[in-house]
Image (tube, chains in turn red, green):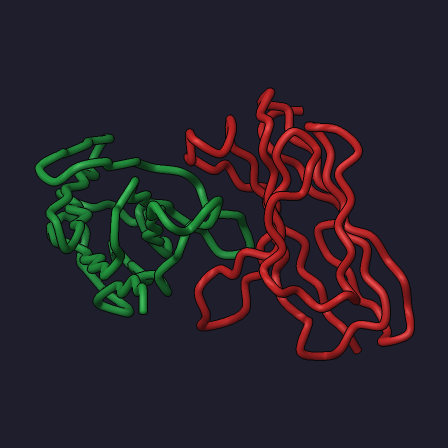
Length: 113
Length: 111
């Protein structure tokens, strides 16, 4: 595997379900990010982790819970989501918080029914 | 308010017809401007970083330039495989880890 991988690629869940998105980067980077991409809107930063520590939470509702066990893996735990949470969720990584070139995974297309 | 505005929203070109995409920004203390390409159903692919006015970067048919207020992505003799959405993002001194993205320009190159 190379680059940034995300699983699953597609997810359909009900509003009462609990699911998790997984991201893994094979680039040796130290910073990882979660973004939300909705139709006709710019990418929205959700969370930032640097060396496993969360450095930014962009006022994200608590129904989204991130976890970063090490610099290579990032999870987004989802529970009791709303239909408006349906979007493409993108994971990205960068060398650190100084070198900002971010490399993105393919995303998880989430549909909340 | 800090803003990144991309224009046009959509652009249709014939193969070989050169053009430019624009990214204008109103941020204080620019630390970097980034260009990405995004194909449908995929994550953005990093293209260029520009740090200071006057800087230029090239890759195949693409050339990115930067002034104090805007950046241009010039596409020379485009091919159908250049069709994608092109995203611009800026990093500023006061934004911490955050990149501010524009809404993108959807480019279609017809054969």
